[in-house]
Image 1 (cartoon, rainbow, N blue to C red):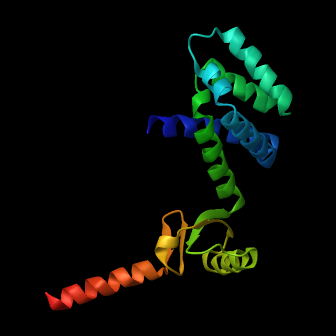
Image 2: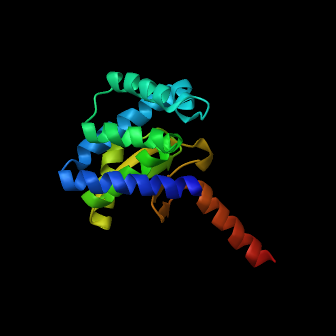
Image 3: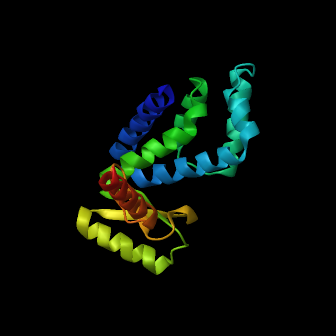
Length: 182
């Protein structure tokens, strides 16, 4: 819970600055790249979080990371602030919150579609188009496979859930039969 609150606070701060500078998408892309890089380098992230290491050593480590990924001066200062204030451990959550804010600003709804079998790109795009017409906003779906649903699809976008899986239908039939028998 605390991590979510902290992440939202810092994500909003960067988002407001990015909006004022007209660099919303640029900052989002840079932040995402850095988050992914730090996720691939857990030892570096651990060192940046560790209170045993002095702040100047942490800044040297961060500067080495910034040589790998080119970022704007504002994002660089933001990362240094996260290290100084011992908030770098929330980088993954900050990236996610920033993306949520960006999606909201751009009118994009992100969600996931779960199917029993791998969906083709064409099927995913058809589903996104249908949901776009229904929701009146751009839709981006991430696909996942879960063989346990037997067939059909389940789509979740925020709090909205469309469950057309065979597993759910069978469960409903079972409840109806049990209800009538008892």
